[in-house]
Amino acid sequence: MTDQTKFLLSESDIPKTWYNIQADLPVPAPPPLHPGTGQPIGPDDLAPLFPMDLIMQEVSQERDIDIPEPVRDVYRQWRPTPLYRAHRLEKALDTPAKIYYKYEGVSPSGSHKPNTAVPQAFYNKAAGIKRLSTETGAGQWGSSLSYAGALFDLEVQVFMVKVSFQQKPYRKAMMETYGGTCIASPSELTAAGRAILEKNPDSTGSLGIAISEAVEVAAQNDDTKYALGSVLNHVLMHQTIVGMEAMRQMEMAGDYPDVIVACTGGGSNFAGIAFPFLGAKLRGGNDVRIVAVEPAACPSLTRGKFAYDFGDTAQMTPLVKMHTLGAQFVPSGFHAGGLRYHGMAPLVSHVQDLGLIEAHALDQLECFEAGVLFGRTESIIPAPEATHAVRGAIKEALRCKEEGKSETILFNLCGHGHFDMQAYIDYFEGKLNNQTYDESELAMALAGLPSVANG
Image (cartoon, rainbow, N blue to C red; front, side, top):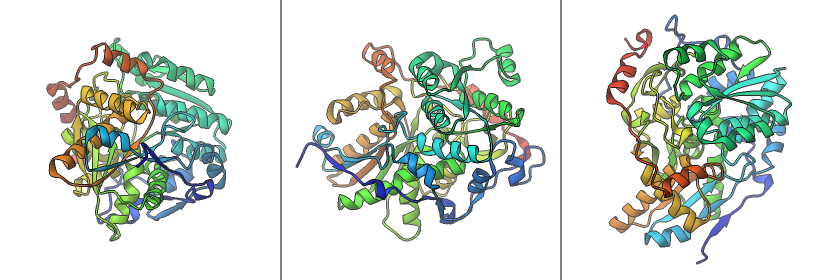
């Protein structure tokens, strides 16, 4: 046995289609609703925000959606990404389990986010759009969209959650290097931002607030569209290239996962690795447990209500049915900024509601502890978000040890932590603690769910 086994595909093995799980769901997902009428929205309702190609993907029921060749050409810069067998981690845990991880940190921005940033930029460019507005939490999405904007000659304006803007200055520098503009949110540039600052000048921001600012900019400018890095159906679908490659690599390994683990914030990384395997299971294939791991300080799947809610704080977006903590919920400033969203992707929420996946909430300190162990055994330092998947996989491996089972565990290492080293510095200096949330604030946010769709 070697210390590490790598399973590589060739460029010709890059999938030619994305996978759309909506074709295989036993029960259709609830449709998005117009906040004014409470009726299902149509493509025209989304046209101010997205180009029609992406809108058609959002509502598609087809199983396979073709990946345009110009997008595959860009994917070749880093795809297919490697799959590793984590022998050294297994040895450190003294577990009979086999642990594999798909590593998305080899992309130009260091995470899985370019998998959707590139096609979103491509389709907007094809539609004659000049500028994209977006939000970002930890900065991985903002970096990725700025990278994609440079490739397709699009201006990119990024509203970055203020606490992350302050915690992660190198992400801002990365966006600017690619030509993007990065603004701390809430800002004075939009009515939504000014309204928040008027109520709370010291607001640390949230993804819901940043979304409101980005949506406002897109809605008010004909040459600008909105781009989202998670949550929406077409975004999750673009990420399934991760799981589709992983299925072929597991075949190369002569193995198949018993358990799939992924961190979840908005749901794109989770869906990327899990949905192709879940779809195969729904079509009569191998059984697999699928575990979503979220932060205990922002536990939408484990504490949220499955209800219709707005995707943003200023209530500009359509209503979507999802596990939500309430659009007014502002999470604490823990370091996994990409997981600080009040809601979960509607499709991820739907499969959770159907009992097809399970969810666990983990504290910050145990996740950083797992990230350090992973760095010392597998030599890759995970992003704070990715440490949740690492910890989830370790918990499964230790369960196998207790039960004497030799199960196969697969997780998605969605990004590296090279721009997050201040978080590790704080961890080693004992400055981090397990963040939580105010139960009364959560109750207030949930009490404010829109009545038009929830009775």
